[in-house]
Length: 293
Image (cartoon, rainbow, N blue to C red; front, side, top):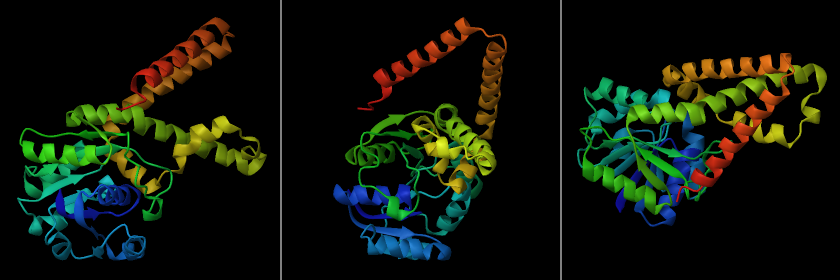
């Protein structure tokens, strides 16, 4: 499908793309582009057979690459575009894996003046608590959703080709607008991560005095799992999508306040209704959406 796939940011996300593409025979060669400080990680990727070569020089990495996927934290994408601009090839398919899309589009416009037609914004809805290339999994994207957010000027053939690439590594591909993507992901991913970070931070400070974690059960482990996610990545995501996240945080605070009032009033019936509705809503989700196929 591609002669040379270039991954920029060969960590969990980029490494898993590389592994899956290689396993499915979607490219003849996989290379990585990264910064000097990431040399040990790229060297490890080479040792593990995730990539065939790595570079810190964009010109060398881009030479012969007919597909380039940016897998760095979204806060660094404008700098990546600036690095790529002198070597941008109209015949190459460019994409990204960022968890916010408006910020990526803004970064492209800031560097190029417009979003190049051969850049196809995308977001794989998959991840894990661990980071780095050693955490990469060949099946990370299997039976997961991949969202493409094309613009009016995005080349339709590039969209089709990227969609086919992701389908062949096992993903279920959806198209939506940039705005819809950021609104949906703020509610289903960004807010839950913030809640997990906040709760674990709160209990962590208490644990220093009262050994709370010693008695934590499975429910705490399940809920807090995503608080193990990469802090740099989530700092970038939350700042980039704060306009969508902050109203949701305010709504959540209001819901907590409502439940607090129910407790103050010993309103058992309303508490039961609140918990029952949430249980039923989650069951609908499991029955309707849990299997992306």
